[in-house]
Image 1: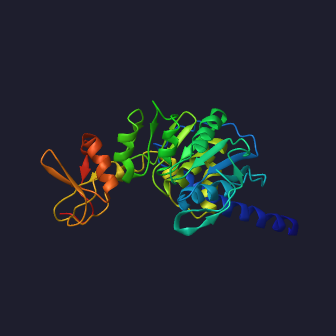
Image 2: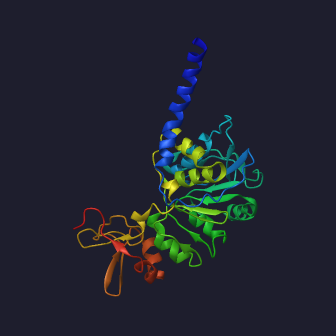
Image 3: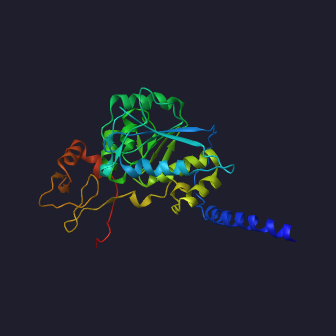
Length: 305
């Protein structure tokens, strides 16, 4: 009887660990995309392409996801590193200092590339992404990192998404790309793009799912205490599918949707209607092709009557 009692505790412990994950999987939306499986060959190298102004959550969110993946045998299959123009400290969002692991000249070939929002990309960065993507399983952008990926030309003729406040400029700058408003993430071949900020966590979990299945991805999310389920439903960003309405009582920038002060904000008049902007750059972008901005559907913003 003592031997049987000794076996009972490990079994109960295992069940306690698995039951929450099983519940998490059972609660998954039924309209999640097909698995579109990838063939893992660990260690899987994941390159994070960064430069000045890199938005922290855009790369640290996916970094934490890939770091936390643990297979049933206890292995951690992803090998993570940063790549930039030079090995010198860069200043990311909020003043964080980062010393990249490699330059574009000596970085190992990745199977996954992560591109966060950041400053204007160098020619070396664009060339490296363009060349290395020929052999990646996934090259993914997060937030306005989609602008960097788009500038490589790889997204021409394909679908993508980006930060909801950048839909207008993206549509104008890259007319050859089909912009998906309201998508948490978009996958097109070995290219993928996430919406803004936290969307990168969901796309990273989706990549994990494609490599190792839903159970491993769900266990990773559970261990991170991440309760978001956007990674199970690519169309879960519908709240951002339409642009906020700018009214006299609540004017917003037509470029990004942020609140503006009409007394001091740049503005343009198009077809008898006044449009306000956060900056002169937003106004210039709008003035180049106003029809592409005003063609997007609008909705009332929170607090409007």
